[in-house]
Image (tube, rainbow, N blue to C red):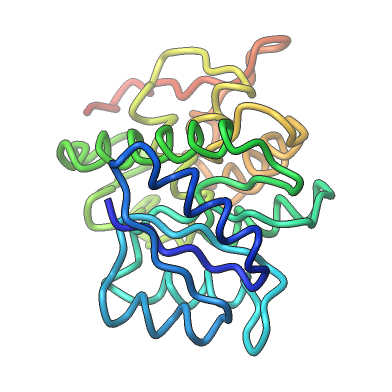
Length: 232
């Protein structure tokens, strides 16, 4: 596994490199600025990127957004590793396209575990595209990233798209907020569950008539329910 670590503090970059390479399963390249990271990722796309936010030349958030616009790195797992610790920082980072968000100071063992978890999710995604979902109002082709309601295309953010995809894949099952955070945000803790509620509310609004299929199960979470004409 080729890992690109984008970190301008040499001690931290060295610790990450040692942590990931000591198992023998990873080869780590270090970039110390945002522009250097974009160049390295373009020349030889890595399997995983660990990205600091406070970088010289070009900040980590902008680096993440640019990587997501490029075909070679659009689906490359990105873990943000940063000293920015507020909930709003995490939400902004994850919405920018990060798959996980770890705050400094960090545990090397936890970092290694998060890397394994992100890579497992990526392998599961590569198993094959989910089928096209056709409901009474909603048609969702997740492989083509095409969502339409009553024949009109709907624009979703990356996080809204992933949320809808996971809900549809697990339709008629109650999914807790913690479960959604873990599978959609890449988080199992440290981010407020109300962030899920905010995203579900936005998603419902964009889906219009189909938004009613996302049902709130009081005290438990959310469930995507079938309509009479829905099918998979």
